[in-house]
Image (tube, rainbow, N blue to C red; front, side, top):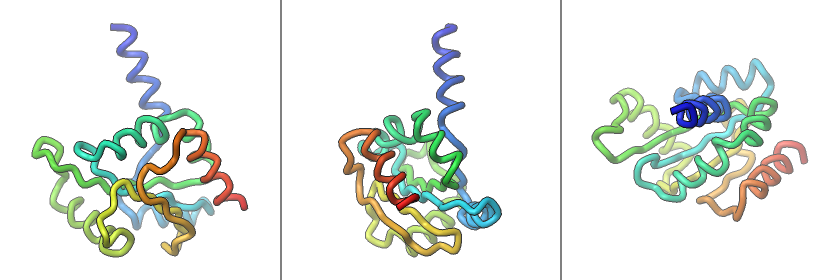
Length: 143
């Protein structure tokens, strides 16, 4: 039981804070002079999305980078009824997808300025390791 509790505790610490409202994230990014990392995910059906979340987004190294440089936004599109989002959130995510992911790619990750302009995009979980993801992010954030 202690092992399970410890795992859940450390997972929650290192998972970062992900906004679900893009406008709130933009405001925070402007206030803190940070970039926005927007991730489109199918959390209960997209195997690469799940793998990317577990291997990258839930890691301590990513959390450290994100806390210093990024405001995180997740636009999730679950399929299972038990994981359905509130109607308002579904509409919000669809609006984001119309603007940033009209082709419906999953996972699809964008690095944005606080004004919403695109700096870089990543289509799929194309990196072979967490280190490559973090290295690519660092290079893009601080060229």
